Length: 189
Image (tube, rainbow, N blue to C red):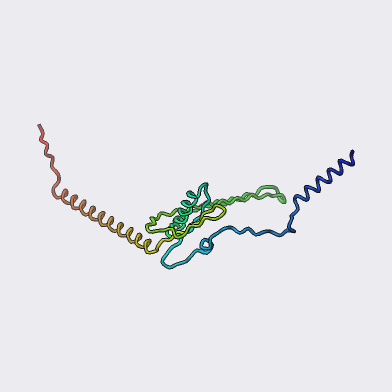
């Protein structure tokens, strides 16, 4: 009985070891992801800003829309980005001489915010991969960005001029009141 138990245990151990062994002599099979060439090597142009996005959601429609939205976000981050960053670096060492322990903790938090109106951006390419990922490329003419910036400066100049004229009118009113103070038209009874 003990002999059978030893043989069964040995066979079970052999089966477990065989299951863990590599079948192809340690060779790894390279998995090729289904990525479009333009996503790996996006085009570069002097007059256009390209943005890339990818998404894999529960439906093709949502995946496509999300990939395009992320591509637009990529353009916006290239055009105008405000970055806020915070880093916490903590170290503590404790213990007796020769038996100390050190605890290190580093935390980095970064937030990127882009606030750009992308009038004139258009979806150049969209690709649906076999694995369900969707890829999108959006193009935004640099001329549109320079026009938008010029418009912002123009609006700022108009606002500054209106504020200047308002200040002038207020000063004229104050000067007029200083020359002729207001008199009450109420009479005492």
